[in-house]
Length: 321
Figure (spheres, rainbow, N blue to C red):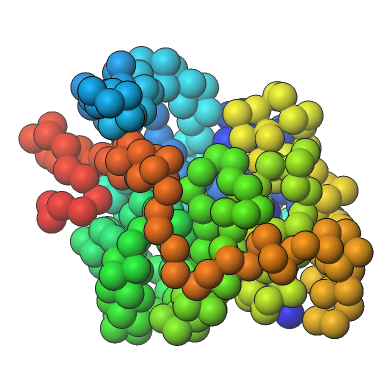
């Protein structure tokens, strides 16, 4: 049966009480896994091209505007310490869901890996899919890598899959579209078939707009045989966090969990009623080009975080130490 990952992202707002509420609500409403993000504000890099953004002479955007200072201040309020990680793991165990995390800076791998995870699973953001030095170190510390592929090119996905399997590790790859939000027409869920040629398990990490698209893309992925579906999750109102618009509520999580328990025929019939054009609009093609927005996001997020060497200099996830 397909598994559901409740991604708490930054919806915890840096507080343990809210973190505990989210874990309990996710477990109660059908999540199998609850994932956090091991983001540390001090790992944020200051890159000049994103202070004001860059516009080409023809008006096309070359680099998004994402100034360092306000982004650092925002992330600082959301920092979770290693003790908070321990709390997260404990609460997940208490609620009988499996915890895991996304690591964003390579220098954090040993300390995060040393925590008492009940299963040795780690998530890799799509911007790190091409970064073989990063994948190598993750494979040295974890047994199961779940890699998002959205901001990566086909050859990078193929190379990452071959590398992780060559290291003898369990591999799951998630198709996603790295526009926040993306539309149903951008989903191209047929891509799950292509990804399955390279990974033992496949899934869909869904960033569609909840108010507009509800659970259509996630349900379609399940109907197509996805092994995993990941959705951002919140117990707050839509405007209370940055990720609120792409985050599902406990009620929608329960709806998704109930849907995955249906037979494949029942799932398709349900989708035919809820969104009759789901096949025409959501399936798309196995192969696709990254959109301009995804390329801009790739440019910003790949290198957003870096790790500090002993001499105080930084190295990125694609660099050797």
